[in-house]
Image (tube, one colour):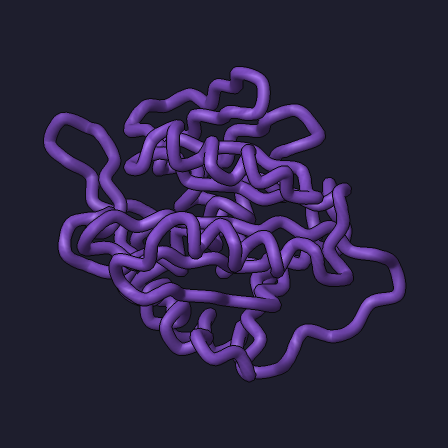
Length: 225
């Protein structure tokens, strides 16, 4: 168990701070990133909306403004339609980004979203067990440890806020609280039970959105914990 795990194990206090008040309104237009975790047969699909203030700054603020969790086995075309309705609503615009998890479902499912011609920037993310971030056009390969590092740092620094009024706020809070880091004997990192019996759909969607919001548009920085 490393420092990331310690931070998340101590998450009760951090999560309480995150939920203790609604995100405060800001004057400047924020940058919105939606993280979409696409579940398979026994996994939920979930989407979170990250409202980012101070993008590109060390003190950027992440406010989770919206969470949607679909019923098990919801057909992908139905999810595409739901996401399409959401991204066409203000304040979202073509300047914002939808990050889709391509890891389990593969490119054909992601291509369904591309074919829908959604009015938003769209990227696909494949989560890996490696150590390096790579990019090929609008497709990213991101190590699990990088996603977890972002969430841990944002919680520890009080920069991640969850609107307590959201229907699924408790779901996300519980998932964050049980999200743990384990270091295997081979020195590879595994985080919690990613698709191994424990629901982690809302926290994964949040992590993808937060990571992209922190890293896209500038040089990638290694987060050392």
